[in-house]
Image 1 (cartoon, rainbow over the protein chains, first blue to last red):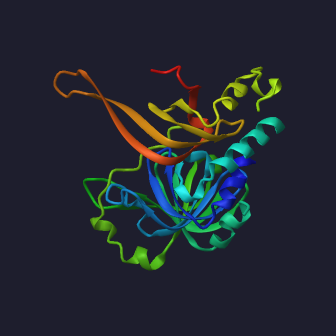
Image 2 (image 1 turned 90 degrees about the vertical axis):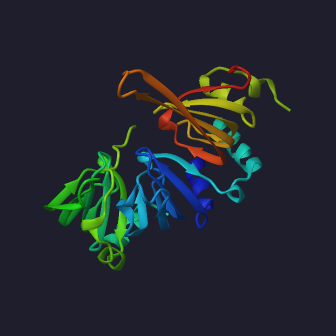
Image 3 (image 1 turned 30 degrees about the vertical axis):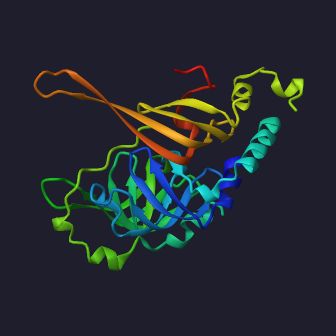
Length: 93
Length: 98
Length: 97
């Protein structure tokens, strides 16, 4: 639940989602669900010349299972809150 | 905030799907479930190559199992009609390596 | 203040809990390695790392000599969420060169 809650707080911010097929998609986080499926708006592929496959896509749904990384905006990370939430989660689990 | 809000607004819209084996399938979303299984109608595959433009293969009615789906994109019809697919050259997408 | 219970290591994830706010080493699938400060994790080993250095190792075969050419590329990311299913191992600080 920790990361589901975290990403819900991040809605509206710009992120880059890097997939396990090396495709990197940048966009505004629109929503997330408990599987960490991610919906982005106003998307653009980071290496558009190499990957023109999504040129006519501006909104997309990314399946959580194919996500490798999410590059986070520095103003979207509060390390103290994350530490507390992680310790709480570790006790509960 | 749930998966339901993820795809409900795309039903009856044209979508562009990227599968885990790197294929790109475009069609009309007719249905889906919580496992991201998709029903697509009037679908076709766009085959990318570095030698020729994009080739389109007619597929028709397709059900794609959610486990094999990477990305479901909403196809912007205006942007898409301005694309000259016959001039577009690219390496096929790599498969997803889990 | 860490109580005795907080610092006891009974299972693998306890060791990771003790690495919170420390720099750790993470080995990932597809020949990727990360070094960064651990800010959050869960039982799947999903993580958020800060000041991350990623090293990707690729091996190319020379067309003529068929020799293996090992190349590494590096990049630095301020904050990174890492999905746990790609994690092979996590190592606490000072145990890596």
